[in-house]
Image (cartoon, rainbow, N blue to C red; front, top):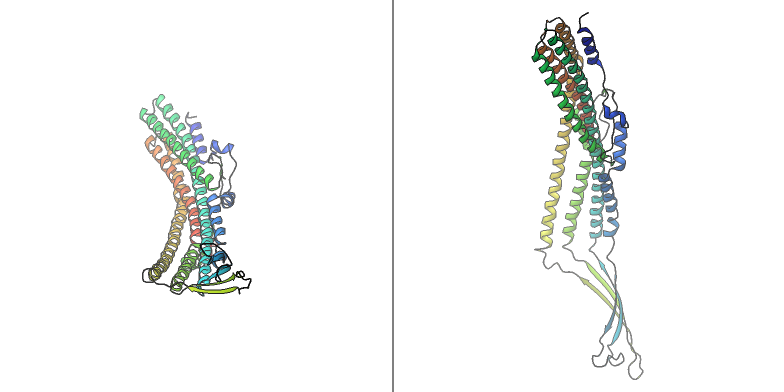
Length: 428
């Protein structure tokens, strides 16, 4: 039997074997759904946005309430030389109360502004929830891709170690060249470098995922090895556009901001009208020096503020609020275009990844594996040179990585598409 036959048999087995990285043996398996739930339940950034919304819900009752009344206690018309309450007939001690009344409609508009700001804050919470879920999903799939890439690289390392043995064996018996040994060792070194880079990238992605889930950055996690291929049917682009216009929190947030700006403009226009201050006071007078009683006084006050500087104050405020209102409307148009374009881009990415996955899975990879197997057999009988064998295996490695890249990008594009639409229902 040829001395290379056992080695070649081992190579054929390695081509189809599955490798488990060593770091995965000591870590808990982190499912995608678990990662998403952890992040949505514990992410501090999302909790911060939620608290901001909760705080704004308490603003409307404050701004829609009347200003606090003012209670006053006054000593009126006391003579300077004696401070005698009986000396002068107009000397009195007053007790009064006054209340400011904004011009009708102002309190309601202030309440509207606060309510619309709270609504915008609520939609910003939902928008952040969507983005957080998308970032967790995309990062999780990045780690999955790196795991599959590491498996592929480790498997190819074992193959090239066998290549080194084959080249050395043939060189020792006079049937090979020293350059074949050096070439196999060089490719093995490249794969070792790839392993270092992939492990570093995986560690960085895992740190990011841990931060999103609010767990310690150095927490280890292993991902499932086998994930089913995506099999859903994505809805047509016009349908997704319509769903996004109806459900995307970002657009609802901008719409609420428009309504808030509109109410601010109306409130600025109301500032041309005066506010009213109503007051009443009771003045107590003592008896005179002859024991005769004096009538107490009752005073009523009505005052208004005069918009004397309307040209530089109220008018400018109206211009400011008008510009802010226009800005809000343009912001909605801009965000709408951004949402629709992100949906179209995600659909394009999905279609490309789906076509590539099918091409690699059904055509390129089987052909590349057959080529390597044929090269191995041909090399055994000296019909194929070692360089072509190495090239064919390196090509297979690259195709396998591209297959897993397409597999991952399908799932990432689905996550991005769901976030762009504003709901998980993106299917027909």
